[in-house]
Length: 76
Image 1 (cartoon, rainbow, N blue to C red):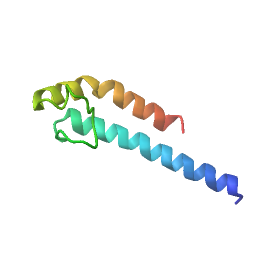
Image 2 (tube, rainbow, N blue to C red):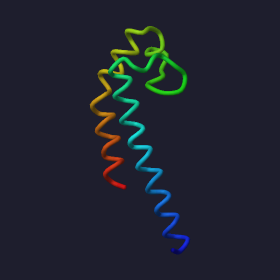
Image 3 (tube, rainbow, N blue to C red):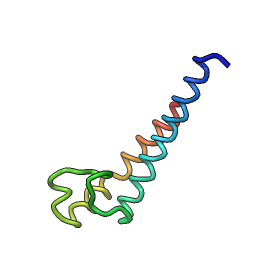
Protein backbone atom coordinates (compact mmCIF):
# COMPACT_ATOMS: atom_id res chain seq x y z
CA UNK A 1 0.00 0.00 0.00
CA UNK A 2 1.14 3.49 -0.67
CA UNK A 3 1.47 6.12 2.02
CA UNK A 4 -1.60 7.99 0.82
CA UNK A 5 -3.78 4.88 1.07
CA UNK A 6 -2.61 4.14 4.61
CA UNK A 7 -3.14 7.78 5.59
CA UNK A 8 -6.63 7.79 4.05
CA UNK A 9 -7.58 4.64 5.92
CA UNK A 10 -6.23 6.01 9.21
CA UNK A 11 -8.13 9.29 8.79
CA UNK A 12 -11.32 7.40 7.89
CA UNK A 13 -11.05 5.23 11.00
CA UNK A 14 -10.42 8.31 13.15
CA UNK A 15 -13.44 10.14 11.74
CA UNK A 16 -15.63 7.06 12.09
CA UNK A 17 -14.56 6.68 15.72
CA UNK A 18 -15.15 10.34 16.49
CA UNK A 19 -18.68 10.22 15.05
CA UNK A 20 -19.48 7.15 17.12
CA UNK A 21 -18.04 8.81 20.22
CA UNK A 22 -20.25 11.88 19.73
CA UNK A 23 -23.34 9.66 19.43
CA UNK A 24 -22.38 7.69 22.53
CA UNK A 25 -21.74 10.78 24.65
CA UNK A 26 -24.98 12.44 23.50
CA UNK A 27 -27.05 9.38 24.36
CA UNK A 28 -25.40 8.91 27.77
CA UNK A 29 -25.76 12.58 28.68
CA UNK A 30 -29.43 12.69 27.66
CA UNK A 31 -30.09 9.45 29.53
CA UNK A 32 -28.63 10.80 32.77
CA UNK A 33 -25.58 8.54 32.70
CA UNK A 34 -23.11 11.40 32.30
CA UNK A 35 -22.76 13.63 35.34
CA UNK A 36 -21.73 17.27 35.16
CA UNK A 37 -18.03 17.39 34.41
CA UNK A 38 -15.33 19.43 32.74
CA UNK A 39 -14.53 16.97 29.93
CA UNK A 40 -17.61 15.84 28.02
CA UNK A 41 -21.05 17.21 27.33
CA UNK A 42 -22.45 20.71 26.94
CA UNK A 43 -20.23 22.69 29.29
CA UNK A 44 -21.59 26.20 29.62
CA UNK A 45 -22.04 28.30 32.73
CA UNK A 46 -25.78 27.66 32.58
CA UNK A 47 -25.58 23.88 32.13
CA UNK A 48 -22.98 23.50 34.84
CA UNK A 49 -25.00 25.52 37.35
CA UNK A 50 -27.25 22.62 38.40
CA UNK A 51 -28.04 19.00 37.71
CA UNK A 52 -31.45 20.01 36.38
CA UNK A 53 -29.97 22.46 33.87
CA UNK A 54 -27.40 19.87 32.79
CA UNK A 55 -30.10 17.25 32.22
CA UNK A 56 -32.49 19.61 30.41
CA UNK A 57 -29.81 20.86 28.02
CA UNK A 58 -28.65 17.38 27.13
CA UNK A 59 -32.16 16.05 26.65
CA UNK A 60 -32.94 18.97 24.32
CA UNK A 61 -29.69 18.52 22.40
CA UNK A 62 -29.77 14.75 22.06
CA UNK A 63 -31.53 14.47 18.69
CA UNK A 64 -29.53 17.10 16.77
CA UNK A 65 -26.27 15.87 18.29
CA UNK A 66 -26.99 12.24 17.41
CA UNK A 67 -28.00 13.24 13.87
CA UNK A 68 -24.75 15.18 13.53
CA UNK A 69 -22.73 12.25 14.84
CA UNK A 70 -24.37 9.82 12.41
CA UNK A 71 -23.91 12.24 9.53
CA UNK A 72 -20.24 12.48 10.42
CA UNK A 73 -20.15 8.68 10.55
CA UNK A 74 -21.96 8.22 7.23
CA UNK A 75 -19.88 10.78 5.30
CA UNK A 76 -16.63 8.94 5.98
